Length: 398
Length: 110
Image 1 (cartoon, rainbow over the protein chains, first blue to last red):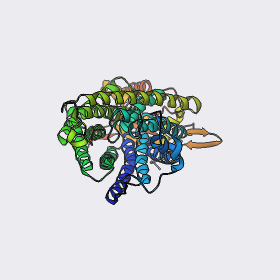
Image 2: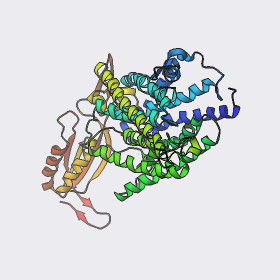
Image 3: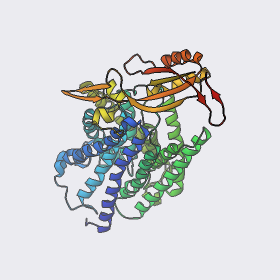
Image 4: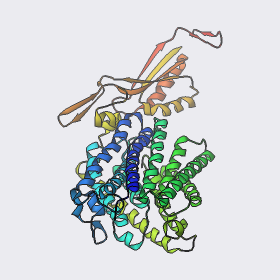
């Protein structure tokens, strides 16, 4: 098929927008940790971006989007980007590769939530390489690369399963392996810089337009629909979480921006299939269930420190199922439960459950393997003085 | 009248403050400080390479109280801020000559 210059220009810009989400995650998380770990937290996102960028070129893209092998993984035909060139279906294959790369990178950045303030940098690099190879690439292949899930008809417009369920439930497994931060539950670990978290949230919200609208892979009506429902769900999520936390006390700005991210995570799989009215419901429900998931996590004394599980894991799961409820045939060609077709909901349930189980189990194995060989955690002293000094030899106090 | 100056781990501040309040000891000034003791901070050992962290973040609590309250404060700070490891802090006590109010003309000399 011939290249379309409009589509190509649009996806080039969307790729850059999605790239900005990775440092956005760094800022979002950086503001939530204690001052002694800010540089570490922010740097982990850049490290994730760099590790995945290289892995993707070496063989990651090929594992995800190479010729299908048994429905579970792609072949190595495109290793070192062999055969990935200027031609393509509407946009150059090279650009499609780059657009997919920035998704893989931000997913690894999201999972750093689980290891905040206690991960050994060298071990994270090894873990990140393993995780993106063994968890992200297969999941991307199942859903987007011609694997078994796409053959069944399981849908994920922009990454509710591939990005959010995998990162969120992976983070939960990773947090269980690495263990709690020293002093967690004994004394407060309040966020040290809330405006920084809000700025990170702003970059995420902004970048998400490229994430979801760009996933149409064309500058068309579906892209416009995705952009509108994305913003609508983010706004609904922000207000819902803020309202819920208002009832229990003050309406915190962190709660508001967390609700926006919850709405964004939930609309991601559904953005090309639902209308703006449904996006309001998806966003509100996501803001509420993610808020209660966070409260549950705290009540269980679980140190999945920055809530990738509660926000991305639970929000992404809800959005993946919501696609099966609210999809309208006139938008993405698929009908949901409300418009009279319950079959899609069943498919979504299968896809979500399989991805959740796979991400949790394989993340746990990767984390355990790194922990037993290299050790995931820094020493007690290193954790006490903070990762900025112990891992980077830098400090914001200097 | 005495001034009690306790330098403790920052993460123990809330606990200490709460325990002091339970004994009716509210008035205090708290400062974030950095410092070191006889151990010269913490030395992190990497393969062949050492990183010295010589100034560790702490908080300083200052309270001016009647002589009789000093022992109570020391007792509370020890009970709440002790971990048993190097770096738990120190408490300094000295005599105050006079306290003058700003809002009122109150003068206290003992």
